[in-house]
Image 1 (cartoon, one colour):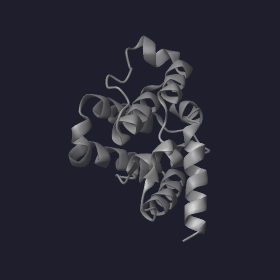
Image 2 (spheres, one colour):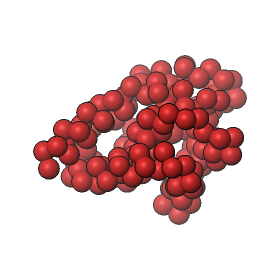
Image 3 (cartoon, helix red, strand yellow):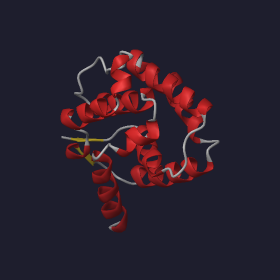
Image 4 (cartoon, one colour):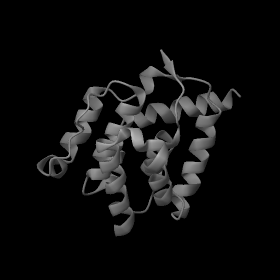
Amino acid sequence: MKTKADNTIVAFLLAFQDLKTVLGEQEKQNLKEVAKQLETQPKAWEDYTKGRLLEIISPNADLNQSYQLYKSQLDNVEEIPDDLLPTEAEISKLISHDKASIAKGFKPKSEATGYESQLNNVVVIVGSSEKPEETVKQATFLEKWKQFLSQSNSSN
């Protein structure tokens, strides 16, 4: 099955992985809030959480530029193959990479089943970690997205 969904989270993760600078303390705090919101109220995405995530992206020039690029590429893609989604093993690797988040009880409560759920779990883990910039770099499935986007957009 192929999925068409909101590209904000994927574009954010791709842009965040490319970010060369570190987030400021307030940005990290805001990311923690987004992660907590996604974990506890995933259905509030459209009404609340998406806006909070965009508030982190917009003022950060480097992050925003990269985000806009990935978002426009993703918006041009008709369907996203399921094999681009993170596997449970890849999600678990992110959890084990950041031991501090487990000690604090941050572990996605829902099983990674649907498109949004799997990506939400990644944002929850990354956003809850002490060093989100390092944790997001461990998300190896994002490389598959980048390859897919470069192939998709070069054929358009």
